[in-house]
Image (tube, rainbow, N blue to C red; front, side):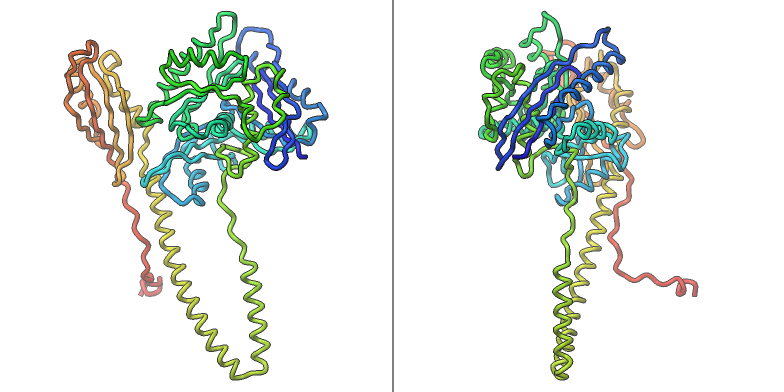
Length: 505
């Protein structure tokens, strides 16, 4: 049976799971958690790099074991090695989405070039736009992963972004009554990864350090960091709320009792999932004596993804690509065979030959009609591509607008912005709707005056007074329209242009 090895590590801990796979079933052969000894010295970039080097050396020594040799490796890629971006794209067919995502990523990621691996996850969309979570990794870092596998006779199978593997595992463990928005907490030895999932897909990922020492309180720490993550996700959720929290845990590790206390503090349901309870996994008794067994969720997730036909993952080893065009070899072969048979018949029968010529004329006439339809379809596709290019060109530089607005707003002692929403209008103009609160009505006037500009029109509500608020009693809503002077795309002309000779004449 083919062997698969899941690798998940950071500078403090190494996690390995070796399984035998057969008919979409995974049987655990070996599972191991190894702590990396701390490098002496105060925390600094030098000691951090030394700690990573110690982890790499320990992992290399571990992989010398013959049991791992020749296995297919499924690597959990760390969040810190990847750049993520939520991107808004025009609605296009699914088979064209990979090319559109790559083209837009080259514009939005500052250091990305053509040779960078790019993958994405489609998110919610509308008739006007499609949202995707795009991820890129530098070729140098991906080459480092591949070199490690090559040095130990491991075959690369997948390089999966770690939070997407845990999100997939949550769906496999609890797919019946999942809420629309949930927060997945994946605790590790020195880090904690928190992912806000919308319809099972991560839209916000936070990696926070876990305090060390005897004064560390797991309940207090998780309560604080979960609250921070919920606040940070408000812009991405667009009015939706986190409906529950998911923790990973096994029997006797205290997570079940912790979840009850955490739910009381958060006033949210808290669900504890056993990462080994997934249906595809067998020989689960081997995990009984493994320390920190709840920390293997990502490793189990990347292994389970190999049993799914089209897993919802960001995988730099198998990124989404445009489907290859179908071969027309059979059609060409059939046409040649028909031509040879026709030629053989023409030798003996002249009148039959004339009839065949007449028949061929009708066929060619039909092909002319078909070619005309193809030309019309090609012209329509050109117009679609030009429309997409116009949409990209007309996209407002939101970072520049946000920077300019923040520079012209009064100080935080006078005003606070509670909501900021940016959209592109059908005519190409940008629109920002900004809600906030201010200390007095005069401050709202200062905001209106400061935000107006040559390309910017401001419409305000004038202010609403709330006597219950003592520091910021005045609420306001400003609608800012940013002019965009990009000319609309014209349809390609079907009229024949005059030749240069006729113009000269």
